[in-house]
Length: 283
Image (cartoon, rainbow, N blue to C red):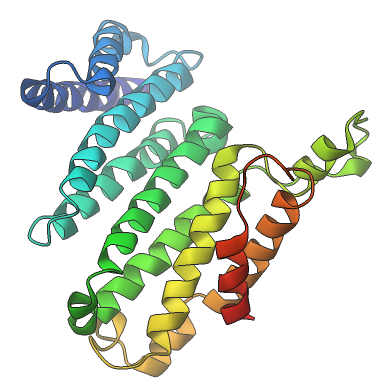
């Protein structure tokens, strides 16, 4: 019975996503991401009946997650191209965040005996965290330039900043830093230094810079006072208890960013000027 329920739920989700993809393709038939999503959905529709087999379920959920990543990427690009219209952006962003959260929830529900990261894989789990955090970063970057809006909606802005930092920190924490004592022999000291710092890709470095900028904005507007009241109706003291320690987080992450860029990655095109300017303010 449990296997049957899993099959039915996955079938329903696949068909819902297929309808959404078809509607979006009517807007832009030649979009590469929507074309890829449509191709994977065709495969999923022919395979979902076997989802009850434990060996196939992770593969199905991984393909399903890739479809969500492709569809939401198309939707995000529309928002970015439109410079996050004030009228629709809050609703659209909330919807995108929910869509990008779904793979984790679905994996936990359909494969309760396995860890989510074992079902989705480390790269996909990193990607869904990264995409949520990067979306909020881009939104906050746009809002940061709307001074009058922030004066009236400071609490909303700070809440977006906080959630962005949380998602990006989760992305960095998916894979713990490799320890040299684990018995791994490195023939390249730069590679060893990068891995021990947890810097596994350009995206990890970009994530550090995004966190630093978000923390800078948080410190700037938290200490600027005025506008918007507490997040979710909380008073300022309660907000301080519940929010992240942006100054400490930003300092820690940017110091690591500078250390990596000026150490193992020196001469690779990574600029540290902005990071150092922010550090001068945060420290």
